[in-house]
Amino acid sequence: MKINVIFYSLYGHNHKMAEAVAEGAREVKGVDVGLYQVEETFTPEILEKMGATEYKKKFGHIPVATIETLTEADAIIFGTPTRFGMMVAQMRAFLDRTGGIWSKGELIGKVGSVFTSSSTQHGGQESTILSFHTTLLHHGMIVVGVPYSEERQKILTEITGGSPYGSSTITGRGHGSRQPSENELGIARFQGRHVAEITKRLVGE
Image (cartoon, rainbow, N blue to C red; front, side):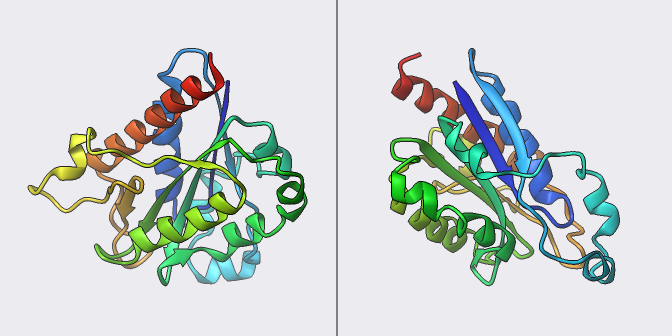
């Protein structure tokens, strides 16, 4: 059984979340997990001006996702920062190239799930995941979130991301000064494991 985690990250937060999601998925026996990033559309000059160059180098070794990264998998877990309440342009550009496999129905019946990040506590995390689901549903995918059996999304003792729609992290302002908390990473690991368990039931392994 194959699960691919596909993310976009600028300052490393979604990379850390993606690693945690992949870690959780690997806890399920018989699951092969791949980790990919979508192609960068910013030029090196723009990345330098944004102060992102050094961050990007830390996960530059991770391969870039292709259309085959989608079709080969039984489940796909996507990670994207939020930009004004929606997915980033880099992820949108990747998904906009999937018209060919949409017309052939090649993602129908595959499991899809989403995680995200924002710089502020109410910065569009839920709207980003919910609007992302629209694309998954157009492809005929089975959408899986994070049920409330994951108790970490219920805590009130600290500020944290995480919702029934998917795991998330709050990055803070200024190049994302806040790193994912252990609570947020725990929800991400749960999401990966939960998706793997659901997918295993569906494919009958």
